Amino acid sequence: MTTDRNITGYTEVAYGGVGVLVGPDRGAYPYGNSLLVRGTTETLVVDPSLSLVAAAPPADVVLVSHVHEDHIAGLGSYDVPVHVHEGELDALRSRAALIAGLGVPPEAFEAVDAMLRDEFHVHGRPDATGFEDGAVFDLGGRTVTVVHLPGHTVGHCGFLVEPDGFLFIADIDLTSFGPYYGDAGSELADFEASMRRCREIDARWYGTSHQKGVIEGADEFRRRLDAYAAVVEQREAALLALLGEPRTVDEIVEHRLVYRAHVEGPHVRPVERRTAVQHLDRLLSGGRVVEVEPGRFRAA
Image 1 (tube, rainbow, N blue to C red):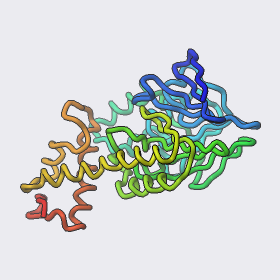
Image 2 (cartoon, helix red, strand yellow; image 1 turned 120 degrees about the vertical axis):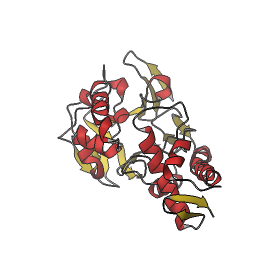
Image 3 (cartoon, helix red, strand yellow; image 1 turned 60 degrees about the vertical axis):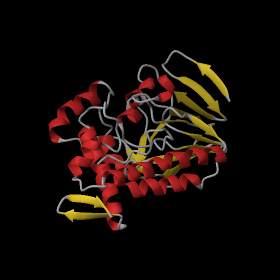
Image 4 (cartoon, rainbow, N blue to C red; image 1 turned 45 degrees about the vertical axis):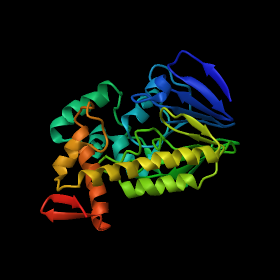
């Protein structure tokens, strides 16, 4: 592993032929960690972040793991082919479609639109094309294979770089915040399946989009992945404890399963509601929660 500091707002750390472009504060939001993958015939960038707005390394193609603003903020630096999972093509091509997929309330649309435009430089890429699970990008002596990992978003993907054995898992980011499945197109069951898929892939390095960076070795990665997945169980346990007496969904939202009390913004209540409803549905179907009267739920 080698390290090279430069003046473009990121630090490039090399893992074999994969350069991880680490953003400020270890890639914490609103920044992120991008990839620069060099082959003998082409160079590829994954998830151009805010750090790549001022000065981006040259590349022949861009891959986007999923269409969230922190993963595409530097996309305007590249007038080259751009690819994303076909399930998120509309969101990448149009800022309005992106906002709709986030599921923000209508009254917040204008503010979110301005934030995406002014703070994250999101302008849409109507030229973007789609890929599917298993698609391979051959860079000459080095390949990048798409690994579809839905749940965080419908088209969320990882990328396996070979022969280096580097698996980029994007926003399965192993942070203490835990899995995020609060978008309009998010799905808890899919997220859990994606974590299981990651667990089955043997790699030398596992790269994340945010603070945890790169984990070396499958055993250490699986240990951290298990701890990350356990946050889902912790949320469920907190919900069951709250439902020791009957509660409405609104009351669950006010209690919060995802965000701490000081966090504010137009996204908070919608995310809390979608998260709560997904857990409620699972607990109801498993007989662990009952609906004692219309709209009021209690632990069984």
